[in-house]
Length: 75
Length: 271
Image 1 (cartoon, helix red, strand yellow):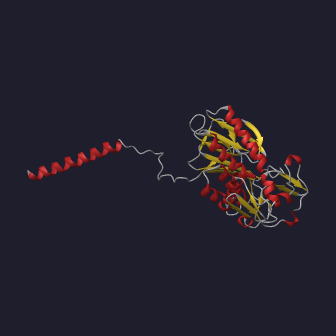
Image 2 (cartoon, one colour):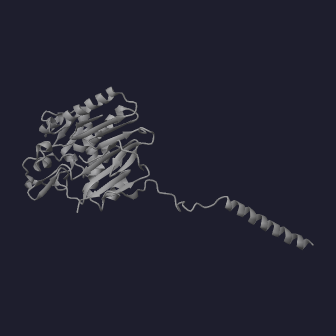
Image 3 (cartoon, rainbow over the protein chains, first blue to last red):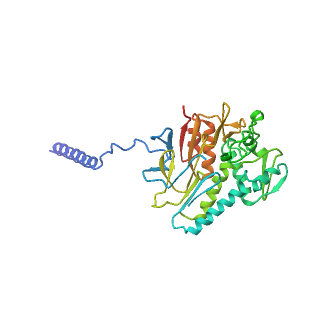
C-alpha cells in the first residue's frame, strides 16, 4: 500500500513538473530573429548604398529616408 | 541661411532662432574668413606667416586654431599637417582656384618636418620656424563650425564649406538629417566632414595635381580613395579623420576610422 502511494506521488509530481515546464516554455517562445550574442557597442555595420563606395555606421548614427537639410561635401 | 565663405558654400540652420541671430552668425563667419584666409595678404594668418622665425602676438581665435592644428597632427599620427603652405605654393595653389593655379615648382618638394618642430604656441603668442608657413584649411572650417554651433543655440546646424556640426535633436526631434555618402544620416551633437582629391584638382602636363598634401612627401597625396566622409564627436575631429583616412588608403582607413569615429563613407578612385 505504502509502495503504491509513493509511486503515485512520484508520478503526480513528475506530471505536474512537466506540465508547469510546458506552460512556462509556451509562454516564452524564442524569437527566431533574436541575435545569438549581444551586439558590440560601437561596432560598425557595412551598408551597401546605391552609389559607388561603402558606408559604415556605428550605432551612434542612424540612417533615414527623410529629405536632407544639408550635406557634407569635399571642398 | 546660405552664403559663400571659407572657400565654399555655408549653411546655417536653427530651430527657434531669429533671423537676426543667423545674420550675426553669418557676419561672424565672414569676419573669420577675412582674418584667417591665407589668400588675404592682410589677414592675421598671412601676417603671422610673414613673420616666421619670431614670436608673434596672436588673437585668442588664432591661438586656439593653431592649438587645434597641433591636436589634429597628434590625433592623426602626423598625417594632418597644417604646415603645408610651402607645398601648396609649390603646386601652384597660391590663390583661389577660380582664378586658376599658378606656376608649379615641385622639384624641391620633400617630406615635412613634424609640425611641433615648426610651430610653437603659447598663451597669446606663437612662433613659426623661419621658412615655414601655415595653411589652416579644413582645420579652420571645422573649428569654426564647432564654435559657432556652441554659440548659436541648443538646436542648430552649422555647415561651413562641408565641415558641419549638428547640435541638438533637429527639426522633428530625431536628429538633423544630413547627406553623407549618398544616404541621409541623422546627426545629433555630432560633426561631419568630407575630404577628397577630386575637387580643387587640376592638370599640369601629364601630372594631376590637387590640394591634399601628404606630409610624408610634401606632394599631392596618392591614394586609392577619392573621397572620405566621416561622422565624429566634433566637426574638427571629423575633418582630421577624413583627411587622415584618405591618406591611409582603403586598406588601413577602416581600422583607423573604427577607432576614432562614429561612421564613415569611403569612395574609391574612379577606375
